[in-house]
Image 1: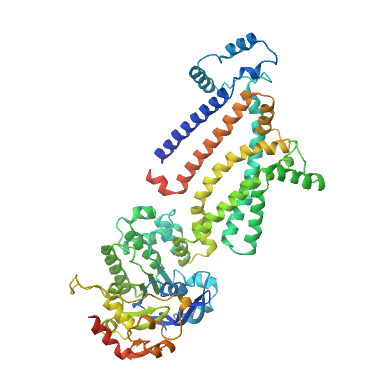
Image 2 (image 1 turned 90 degrees about the vertical axis):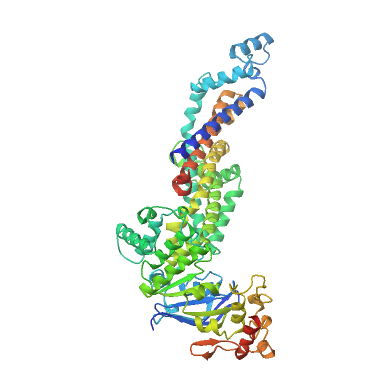
Length: 326
Length: 306
């Protein structure tokens, strides 16, 4: 099938299971959000998609299919040909993601020349056109500038230009707006929405921000401690969460229609470290609905409504949490 | 860029003036130089007469200005031993030391930098362990010991290379290795640390995500970024090579300024020593200046900010 499909992906670091059985897919023109707390494995999943995991991490099972092609079957050389051309990524820290000593133009052109046999001049012309399409004014001057001369928002636009210059099928956006001012965040999200619509690029959006998810995602996978807790269409999940973690996350988002004197809801406890993952549901220690079964048996991802899955033995009682929090 | 360069040039000039002043103070205040110049057993009258003739009886400030003025005319005085200008004595030895320093620098750069790069890129492998053992050896062996070991092994036992003197170009090999070993280790360690530091940065991951191989990312992005700290060390190492030449030249009987320094100190030829000290200090200042200019060429943040 077209697009990206992740099947049952598991990643270990030093024997600890940090990503466990993650499956999701994203098609052309679709935005799939992976949301969860720091350390829940969402960024590792992104690096695994590119085959750029840190040395200590290792994929222990599962498949990553890009347009039906299993990436695990490819050599490093073949993977390199995909990176930046079919599968691109933008990062959380746009300024740090650019080589401080190379011009903006040379870095965008490099991304193009790695995958196309063109002259430097042609690649720079392509880079200039790309700067225009990501909304950077005065592109001729920008091409000759260095990253330190640009703001964070501008650098993220440059990163997007680098990521999209070869017209990839899938763009992985790892917390693309976390390091930016709120107004710039909105601009970058708008830009991403526009690019998806124009080019039909599928986006895997990694974030911890439910607001960002609501803004641009079509579907969302909520991750907790390396597993998918719940996955489905954004509207459906926001309206009727079927996993206690999702319900509590949504309840902890600040709201304009609630008095500012009201205490913000929080989730008690913290994410266990991977060495301490026990049997059963990994959320059980913090879950108000947990019982004996949750501490022994791992709940499978089951469909509750069409396209909406959650991994909870008590999915039918999650609405109680939502009501109590409201 | 021009303003930056001009600023550094002014700083270098101030540093040179500081060096001249310190050399003057050390030479004049470490004792009356007249006593070094008269034959033993001279009368007080003879000493006083010579002191007056050399101008050492005048106020220190006048002597200092006079000293600066003669240096301005490139007049470094007459060697009290050989009775020819001190600058000529030193100048005749400079080419040998330059040859030796360049040889040692070549050893340090062409062995040290590739070793450092290899240690960083293949971190944790057997190659890194072998190379770090080499670097540790180069760093720990004092030059007088490594020099003698080299002479014994390659000169005496194997008989491949001359043991001393400056007769032919092959005689340069052993002293260059002995002198360059410490700098080689320093370059290897600095390059390794700088590259490991850069490899962990986000822009490397981003470069690989665009389709560059690890080697490609190192070649196109990491080396240039890692060069900045290495240039700092290189500048200091060039000065250290000149200073280190004092020992190596003595061990290998190499007729450079290091050997001359030892000879001049032993014969109390203080004007020659003064020229050598000035020369080494000025080389330090100039290499630092050169390093500052290279930074600006490498790093647009320095070039464009000023």
